[in-house]
Image 1: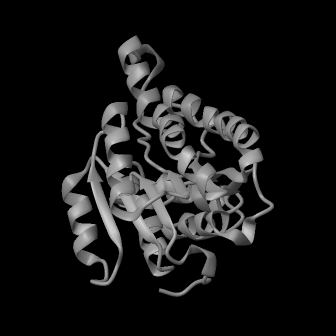
Image 2: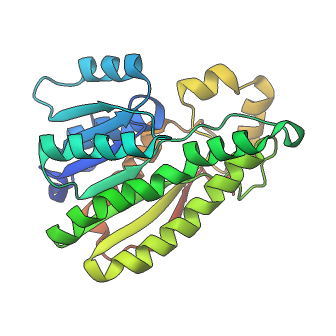
Length: 252
């Protein structure tokens, strides 16, 4: 696996939410390649088992099966990673689902469930792990947002609302945790060609739109996001916090 090597990531304990497939899988693989101790949480048991089986035998990886909408289960999963690898000093809040939905179909229950999937767990993951980082003298939290709300994408108002709130959460956490040398940044991916996107949403019209709207005339892949995550997790970005960085091929 080619790419930059960040010595500060070696032997660091990392937690990635939604790490079993898609962008999360690419992030897990990248941290493994840095020699980090990587814990990841996912609801998809089969995808997570497949990832574990494909990683090098020497990799320090631990999987916790949990539904992040259940905050008690989330807290147990965080504790499981901590028990396996020690204090967590890097958190990547990646888990999300961009299901499409029309305004008229949204119920109060659906709204709450979408916020739980796409936003709520980010705060409670940070809350659970912040004491580890404070005690260690610092840490890095990377929240994964989306450009969907920036470009005003339609047909998923609950998702775009939640993802816009990730930027506010990032700035709030950065301000409150900064005195403890805990950095908090967010990354806003563009249209990333995960298997899910290709199976559910990508059409010939969509491909044409990519080539029209992006400055870079190629499809973006999960590893494009994973490489950016590594930089914001590593000490090389030690002066970077309270920021939201767009990785979208120049769409916005």
